[in-house]
Image 1 (tube, rainbow, N blue to C red):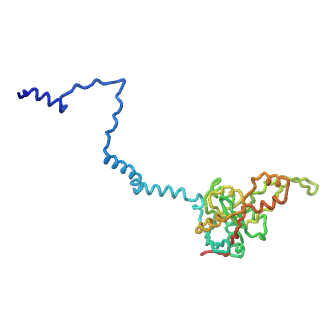
Image 2 (tube, rainbow, N blue to C red):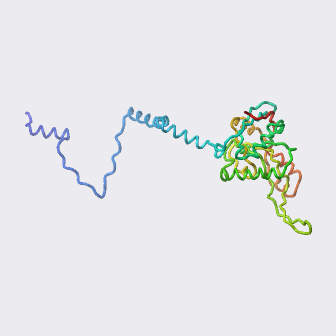
Length: 302
């Protein structure tokens, strides 16, 4: 027996759920929790995972992001102060390690910022000063060349070099002179020496106060090249230039094995305290390379 039209309409509303429903009362004090997202099928989930994984890569190749990252990296890599000082002359040092050529180091000199220091370095490069001389110290932060041992230590010259070191430090800011790799400086103070002590001296029937300096003052011919930040050099060396080319050669020098520094040993400290000469001799050998590192040739580049 066929159903009447009103019954058919009621059944279709129940099946399709299209009938007008009464809205549920609003819950003011207890809001319903957010509904979880609908579950994705396997293909949809795989596509979403690929999109999420590819998002960083897509962002990294965008021109704006790439330029910003390059600018940030360049700012971090730029040597503070070194890049700002003008180069007035160029010199080169050919280096050998263990008798084998290791390459050339090209140095740009700061004749305006440190005229006396740059002039001292140039005078030794153009003469026979640094030829056949050794790198004698390799420590974390820098490598050190022996300089010219027979060069006279003239107080007026070393005082002027020390004044230039203070001027460069004031120009570059505290602890920023040797804050990056590639700084070339000549040593004007020995950081291992104790500070001068006041001493009473009788002259002409009068007592005068003098400063007594222990040890020998450097003659201003040793030079160092930083391999990383070495702020401890700010108080002992004057910045004269920077490495323009050949940091790979400096890295080869820094990689040469050295005599182990044993200053932290309690036996060494006791021996040094009681004045044992063997401790003094041993200390001179600390951080010295086992392989001979020579400057075979040097000069000025046009």
